[in-house]
Length: 309
Image 1 (cartoon, one colour):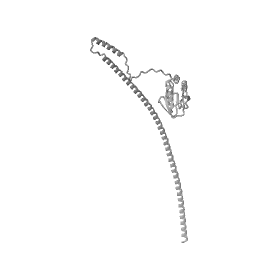
Image 2 (tube, rainbow, N blue to C red):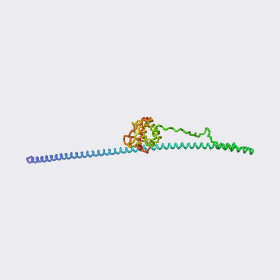
Image 3 (cartoon, rainbow, N blue to C red):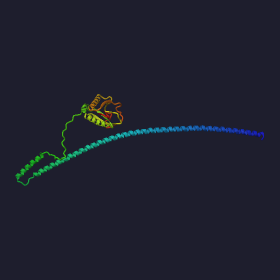
Image 4 (spheres, rainbow, N blue to C red):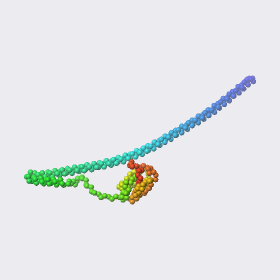
């Protein structure tokens, strides 16, 4: 091989090396570009996943808030239904009592009607017996006239004689007049404040509070006070009888409340006077009682807790 051929091979090898170097450079550039694109694509995918996760979290949070609101609405509806059920039960009990009273009155009327019929039948039998006894046999005219005169006399006596019931009859005894009882000191002390409106809150379940509330309510009703009673549940820590006055009440209301505290103390109750610690129309727990008037309308509030005496 001569020198020209060697030079040709050397030039070819140089070109081949340059071409391979160019290929290597292009491959490195392609690898860098693909790596950069892969990094950008991974970053975009990660950002998209993070945004999707944040969206799902917000959707779950919004759904949880809506569920909590629905649960609160359901609780309010349940409380309203329970209140309406309690009112309907109380109305049904009152109707049952009225029906029982009407039934007792009808029974009494029927008994009185039967007794009146028995008395009328007994009177008829007695008059018939008198007539049969006075019927004369065949006597002469003078004796017949004498018998007729005797019969007329006996009929007049029988008509004038009051009907006496038999010993075994079921006639009702005549009621005897009863002496009028003297009013209790608690009632006498509060009658000068008759017409005062008050709301009574009785803690539930406290047995002695229920008994004391019934006694105080009866005494105030006898004294002429307008008292409505509610059962108070969901509260505790109240002892004795606490008489509260709405802030800004007039002098007559404060005097009536003070007289009530003194009268309750004289009657043996553990009574104190105080002020409502918050808004007069706000209270904890629940109240079960009449629908009208509202439990916050009266200016005097009587709270009966544990150990009222």
